[in-house]
Image (cartoon, rainbow, N blue to C red; front, side, top):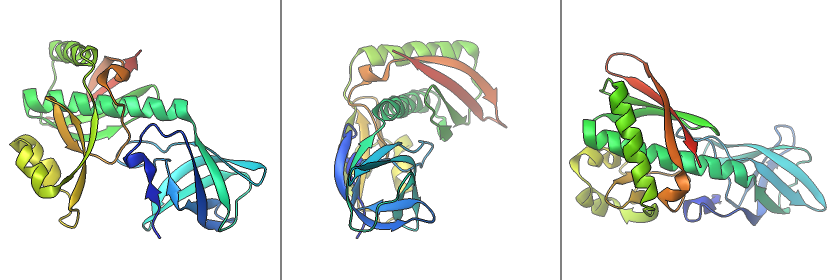
Length: 240
């Protein structure tokens, strides 16, 4: 039985009830039949929080994908297989990651459309994040202009939509620059989770996002670094 990934449809779920499918007291992990905790992947860090069971609670300090399973690593007592638990996310942390991830999509879209440069690396953090772009070399004035355009879109309060579409439908809908993002997915994936900011971007993604660009907050670009031939790294933070 595979873990049901609740965050794929509802990124705002803060707590949920679940059953322990498997546990390992020595390695301090449990596998649940469902979870709203995001396992670290794609530049987005793990969610954290806690589980409550039988009058006890243990901290969830790390969630990882391993051999097709979603493992929740705990500090504290490890519940046995079959135990019913209540899980609660560290919502403050999760929401920061949601804002950062949506910001990453928006900035990627602006740079792809205006300069044809793709995002070739990223790392989301609580207070600041970084993204690598190729092929491009940013000028200071270009970054200032991107910052202004980004913040104007934030103020428009555009929806950030989660959709599930067939591979064929998506490939017909997206422009050539974005088609490559979808075509890279394994052929076995027939239904694709798409994050769309109408009129701005459409991108395959398994991460967590806000519902509206206004929730992202305004971006402040902190600087750029040369990371190789025609590869620039841009770091940024968000301001409420």
